[in-house]
Image (tube, rainbow, N blue to C red):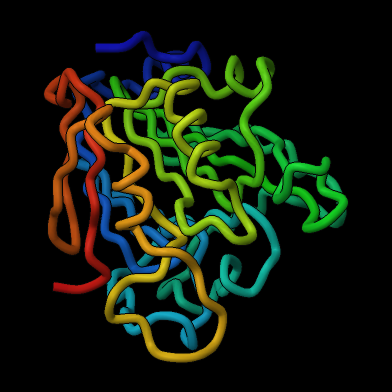
Length: 248
């Protein structure tokens, strides 16, 4: 089990919660949108996409919504049912500097850019980090560049990394491979690409197949279903690319 962050450990002790290995289920809705369900029943919706770009819906009552940046394919909060807490990674033209504990999950952001020119082309992007007991899930949002040393140090070693692979307005494939090496995740879940059953027309992205070709034999590849469950302490020893479907 990896060492817990000080903030999360203190929060767990103060609330009297028992520290145990986390169970995390990830459901890919489409684009960069994921539903993360923890073993404690917390539902987190990440970067909700506008309904014109995906077929899937989210029937669950959501506890928390996180938004990496304010583009329309990442901030459609109306997708979330219930009365969730909403955390924006950006505040106006600057970073929101998120660092909080939500229902036992330490949530913080690391500032980055949507392009490789310091944000001059597409603006800022907030990387969301979710620390659970023994597990760290990292959602890169629309990252547009390889990470610098300070960003790598702030994120730390990821257990589950959600990374854009459709190129275009985000990192290219070689940069994606570099970021994976920088963060050394156990699980890599591709996102922000065009699935085979995507509606015709409109904005287009690259395919996950191009990313898998770029990976070659460097990592194991697993094709999973609409959702996949990960258990802290039982993750694969070798980095594994886990490709999810947007529907069963």
